[in-house]
Amino acid sequence: MKTLELTFNAEFGTARISIRNPKEPIDPVQVKAVMDQLVATDVFKSPNGDLISPKSARVISRETQDIELP
Image 1 (cartoon, helix red, strand yellow):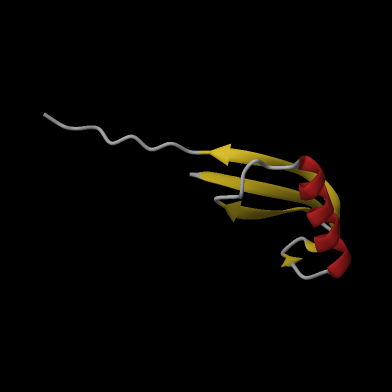
Image 2 (image 1 turned 45 degrees about the horizontal axis):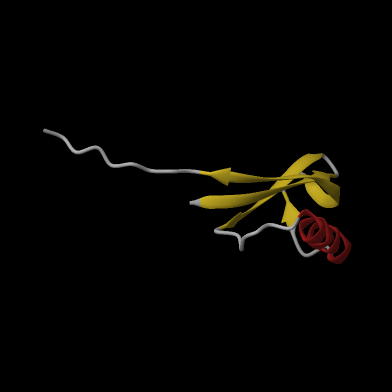
């Protein structure tokens, strides 16, 4: 499972938004544009206050493998 994690500078620290199973390939230009739009429209509130600007984005990949017990 992959997660796209968007990190923003907020009024009182940082704020994160996670998106499960993002559409691939991930386009950095499009990610930045969406992050800018989220800041401009002020649709998300965080415990650290309003979003001020995009800080970073990353894809987190998690793989699960079952272990068969004897």
